[in-house]
Image 1 (cartoon, rainbow, N blue to C red):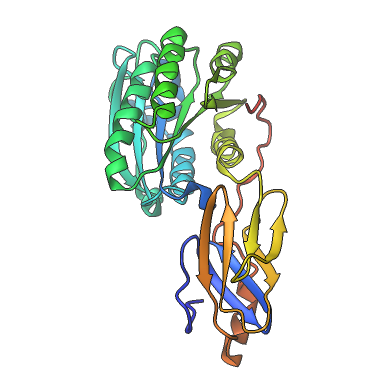
Image 2 (image 1 turned 180 degrees about the horizontal axis):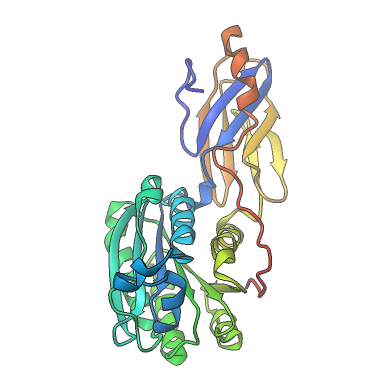
Length: 324
């Protein structure tokens, strides 16, 4: 519904008032306003069978690319959280194992039209440091375009070749964030299959940094078909509000307090004649003007206000691991 009386401001997407009852839908989690997201997919040699044969071999029979549908799903889902709906997408661990093949800034709304046949040159190793350097450089440039927080999702099916370098660079990133030279960053590491080294992943993700806490979180999926669902759940756990929020009236009166996670649809009562409310969450305040009441011709829209603007992330099926 596009409200006739008041402009619905971000992070809200829909607003209804019936008497003193207000129902408002969140467009997205307000704590991730200004989020810049990137997606890095493993392009090492061990991934080649999951992309399927190419060239002459592809003509010999049906090709089952297990990665492409997962990439499309993740692109669509993650772009809904990104500040402009564009994701930096790249294959990593290509060529020598330390190269990146950047696919560009891809639009989430066009996810189904993109092809992901795999990198031009599968890598001989799985070197992650170039991924971190690439994303930090990208995020620095995006801060001029309104980025206030960063999220890099990194998928691998192998043991990392440079875990010590990754940990050392993570310490450097943490210092930059603490000093205010970089916005807050989260790295989400997802392992797929039996070849990943979960102990190695845990050593990276367990690390705590002064003033930051954890930069990393991880989980492991057993099969490629579980990857996208696992990424969605892990990203939501990392980025969603854990401390709830408070809704205030026009003064300091508390209208509603959410102790746990903030739901997608907020419902609360306001005093007679109230013309606005303020949501406080994650240290930020968002004020939304209110109409005196909806007109009767809005009644047909009532069934819509209980729907979140996008489906919640599905739960993982058989992934395992820990969130830190």
